[in-house]
Image (cartoon, rainbow, N blue to C red; front, side, top):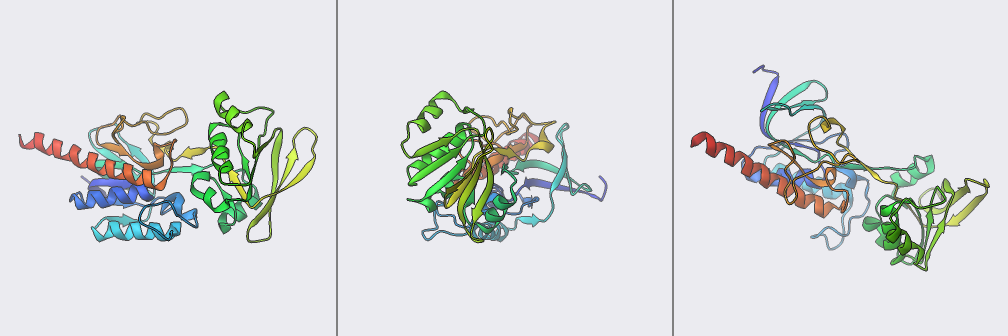
Length: 320
């Protein structure tokens, strides 16, 4: 083996709640995990100002602070946390090969994928501005809806997720305005009926977002454009929710792992195992349903335990 090739027992790709939880469990099992943080160290939670629904934080915590604490906990058990991102993999043979930053080659006994998913946004400059400020733009109603109790909000989207999030917000907010780009929903009939039958949800069809309005710190409204008449309308709102989907960060695995039609890694039900022996998945890279920090952490635990059992079974065969 060339000196430039490193061998590790357990490689963890990604550093959100799933990756760090996997690292904590793997390290405590003497698997000497190496974790590469990826292009967004700490994952999606680093863009979240307040996390109030993760157990153990009675007063809430900021997303970045929580990720720093998880990293410190993983490092306390001697996880080797590194900068860098995985640019290529080869899972075709008995040795799992991974390349970091396009140059460094790592051979792994086990791989835990915790690369997460990225929320899709409209890409408007004003949207991105208030997203970065933490001033009223969100892609997760379940995470952030609580902060908009008794307020008026706008949500963009037309699929099942958008309808589900609009309905969730309707229980908390005074009014929810739903912007649908076409003249019909993409959602299932049952989800469409649910939002249509909710009194405080107003649906605007053939409507695009023209601008997210604000005072420089927080969102104060949304300017919409009717894509048939061209008419501009300003809607007062303190929250702007985007529900147009997520893209799992799994492109580099598609030649080796089974993915569903939208790119999420398919795991063996009830486990973190993938179709490749010794490769496990945790967090939002496989979860298009819950997408919560606490469920990601739970699957990180599962992946580390599955990896440990996989190695133990292999060692038992060698020593038999």
